[in-house]
Length: 532
Ligand code: ADP
Image (cartoon, rainbow, N blue to C red; front, side, top):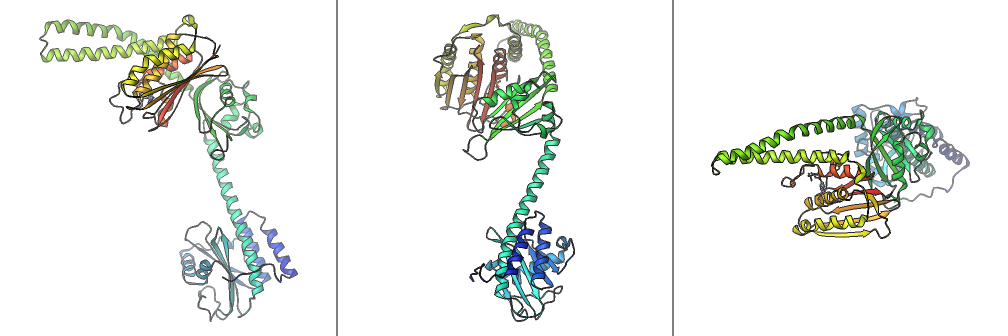
């Protein structure tokens, strides 16, 4: 490979040319950069004809530009016809460009009629002349080939070549930067359009909880008409503007781990609206520490109202349905006394009775959830949280042993004061989470229970190595009757009320439930209760 030492024998006007080119390259307008630089070079080298082959998008579709001195504005946007594409392909596969792309360096053709690398193109007559051609390189790839042509042979010297090599390198970098800048601008526009079209509240915060980005809906929630005016301010400054932000600030202030997701409901007393808030921790690079938080708040007021209406309807229906169901079961038993126990009728009656009892069970569960939701707090007493955890664990041990599962507990509640709560209900919530872990984890799986205190909260967490839950159903998991129907769970009995019961119990105690899960790996369910 021919080595070129760029800084030898540069003359004063060459330096002037280089300075001028460098100056032009500061612009991010790719078209203008190229046009101006090429124009300047053609004048400097006293040539009237040049060509530029470009392949900036990394495809194999090269574009050929035929340039004349003093070419008009817009020239570089020019030829896009199939003809030009074909000519470009021909030059790349047969002509001088092929040599340049292969050798990744420039060259001089002293006489175009005598050099077989030169391809005569109908639009660009150049027989008997000379040419100088240099590559524009990026990342060790040729992204462009610039060729200067002169009608006389022997016009170009090694000195021209050195100068053009320096300039071509600079142009390539500038073009790349211009391309990146254009891409970035495009992405920014796209992001702005997404933010504008998004009905949910979006808040992007840094690791200190300061606002980096929001959309119009987010700004409106924080009482501002101009989203840019509130950027840089800590979110906690807005908790007095909207109560829905109080809990979000609370979560962000607690130590979070990257990759963690939080999902909970919040209410704006000012706007009388309910939101489902999702908080995700993001980081610039894996392991680089938290860079901040992304908060998305979906307005669920309408859904919540409907849910309330549904609950009322269910309560009414379950009351009104209970009595006729009890009658059906009673009459089934009476009729069974009159029929031959081996007959088909007895068998059918048995099925009717069994299914009616199942329906009664469902209604009982429903009523129970409703009762807990509205239960008075007189039943609360001061109890040791650790005792409840131990009872729940003991009650579930037989079930996990039956499936050959390892049930392990890590309890760190040594200095926790007794809590004011309804022990029967809290134990039931724990047992529900534990029995789900046993149910949805296979034979020989692992279940870990963690109970600990952190600041003014006690935490109870159940981790399993079971089937896991798809991310899209996680937000509905705590709804009454919701069952994530997945392959492999068809034979697992359940009515979809356990988690809704847990949520109701924990919320009655002013705590919160949460879930994290990875399908095929396992789930983590947990709740915290305040120490009051
Ligand atoms: P069910 O009576 O169906 O168990 P739950 O309300 O307790 O009702 O749970 C609702 C759904 O959540 C279940 O049907 C199941 O799909 C899913 N689920 C609950 N706990 C787990 C767990 N530990 N692992 C996997 N899926 C779970």
